[in-house]
Length: 124
Length: 480
Ligand SMILES: C[S@@+](CC[C@H](N)C(=O)[O-])C[C@H]1O[C@@H](n2cnc3c(N)ncnc32)[C@H](O)[C@@H]1O
Image (cartoon, rainbow over all chains, first blue to last red; front, side, top):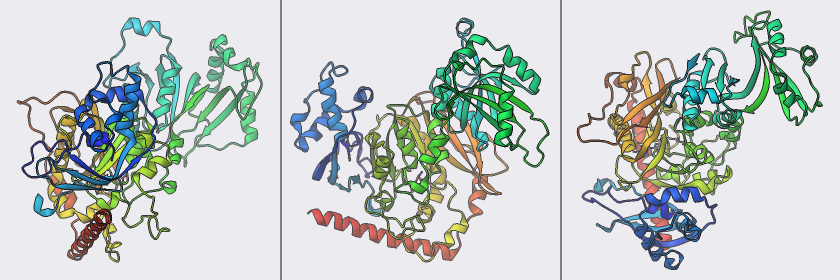
């Protein structure tokens, strides 16, 4: 799972959970894969990103140094920043681990890079 | 002259005057003809191209249009899968004498520009066979053209087309061609992409993998462009995401089927006993060279909220369950296998009950997450014969831009529906609705499962859940 996906994901599927965001991350295996960078897409995607959530996720994974804690004013033209952002959103993959609901602590396992957000019958 | 008016602006007189309009011949594949107009409308509105129709047809495999620049013809050809090729039309007639005299009066400087380089002439005779010798004789009748360059059959700078059209009735071919065309080849459409995406050579496929040609049509209907965010909420083996990524979209998907996303379902190739270890949607993306535009897939139930409320998408393309492939006949073949993977077989009682809701949920979801003018494209099953638009799902913030039928059996068909978001929701909007349940009941009654089939299905479901639990245990156990 990429951090771009994590940035959009909630645990609102759970009964009684209203916000369910952001999900906490527990990592067992990570993989870094180089991915072609598309600056146009990045610029388009920035307004759709919750930046503090992305930064916290990077902190959890131990990569706090790879991203500024705040989005620079000139983010649209700041190429160095855009490259870092690209790395954070697309190149870090959580292969195995868990996502945790911030309200209930319910664990959603990630296996082989694929999060399982299904609930058991008694949770619906 | 007709002007197509589908979701784009008709140019002002000044704009029209300042451009040089030329005629183009668009030759289509003789397949899915009732998707032709819809695909073309989507493509021209995506690229903001104004296309004037001179001749349009679903019966005949060609259209004649006017465009203000060959670049627009290239753009159309870069996307259309129903288009075979596009020709800059120099002459057209029903009579060979007239064709020649028209060609002789075509502006000389225009022709010379292309004929002073290397060239070749292609003769296409539709619905009638001619030998190579006869074709050469036909070419020779054009020897008045100022062909100054040299012939190059392999890699010419210019390809000229002479087309004789004998209609489409192969059992009553007329003596003389119905129509004749002469012109300069501009570009081929995307017929090759169908081959490229063939399921036969694709790493990971399933029983419900979407036909490549229809997938391409869907991505065109959704107007997927470079840098778009595209979601398939019923992703299966991800066929629809592949073409969306090829068109430059950033793609992701969800599916309720854990085993499907982990490629642990029974292989759908007869020749294959077990699935390869590296089968997955991600490896398909790698196979087609678009892994950098594939984001993720997640196991999740569409009827539950998963995403941030303000997540914004450019397009949604999907084939929800009950896309028809679960015809009753098919169920029998599953008897000997406890690991039945077909969603329709696994969750039917749940889904049949909720089917109306699924489509309503899909429209509400689309309105919530699509940007303005973003599109949702999906298949909708129907009982044939009594179709009217008010049977389709309706949402006040979406407008239906296309509904093309694909016939599946005497009784059933499915329609490819394309909706565009036209406004943000407001509190006093009318509700999202779906047409009369009647015809839908009929549709499902026709394929009610027998008792034994249901029992088999339920035991299959139990076996599956057990396996999933065991897998979950081992994957978690491994790590902790
Ligand atoms: C017709 S198939 C889609 C096939 C896909 N287009 C492909 O190319 O493989 C429908 C998919 O919907 C999934 N599905 C069924 N019910 C679902 C639900 N409630 N939420 C999410 N996915 C569901 C099924 O597992 C199945 O893979």
